[in-house]
Image (cartoon, rainbow, N blue to C red; front, side, top):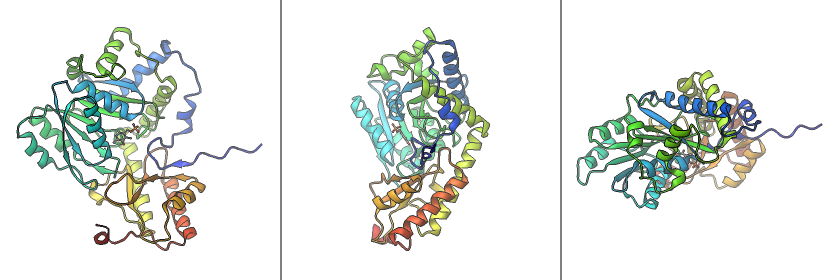
Length: 380
Ligand SMILES: *Cc1c(COP(=O)(O)O)cnc(C)c1O
């Protein structure tokens, strides 16, 4: 009997590569009102709150769908109809929050930075000191568009000092970079199962300050994305309002056990830092240049400038890597041609070295001597 080919390694967060045991957790049918499922569900929410030290202040409200559904539920539920939302934008995910708020008909304003730079707290400070005062500020923790890490703690301190509420898209950092609700004051923080937690896609969640959630009745512009209503249903019935993604939640529960076994946020973060180091060093040795300065590069996803050699074709490169079992991401930047490689998911040092080896082979097949991009002056 021939074995089916193994799955490719996903450098495309997310979906991302998951462990065999996470996938195996989905091989059961569970009733949504069954006691075993409801216990598993409660346990997931308890663990997610504990990951940010939010016990006693924050609650976890999961929502069916991809990460964007959780972000949309957070903005829709927590920004009241007469609220004024300020969004810090340095990439596609910040821009997406602005699009969502406009769909909701909320008053929204943005402060913008280039995609290869973190947001600047000083500009936020100046804006918050001026009228009309925003009631809410939204920021992306790790902007996955480029991989840049935004200064969440400094942003949170300024927002709190000005008496506004902070909403965080922590989709691609949650579970790998530390976020402590006792040090970083936020009303809402959205993430999903299928990034650094290494679950499968299909559920997102929002960690919400309980007092803010209690005050949010009637805000949400959509029933299915109303976090207040979902939380209220749990309080009254202990159950999801609409069909829960039972298999996805079973996988998430297993993923959380594996996260804990790896040493929690610190352990997972360490593996990703090492993944990023191997990737960046290996790619540099082949001539590639990362877009970001090392001090603002999060160990989540790395953007490389497109090589200058005219024999380099991204579609061919992608296919050659795919044939060798590695799937990468095209760039999402508007500023420069680029491609991205993720460091997250069930990937370790061997796989990262394997990917770098495959990149070297792909260059050789294309007859490209170096991954070096055109000099920056020329590109600018
Ligand atoms: C992945 C991601 C999202 C959500 O994307 P979906 O495709 O809806 O899962 C939102 N924000 C950031 C920063 C992300 O990395």
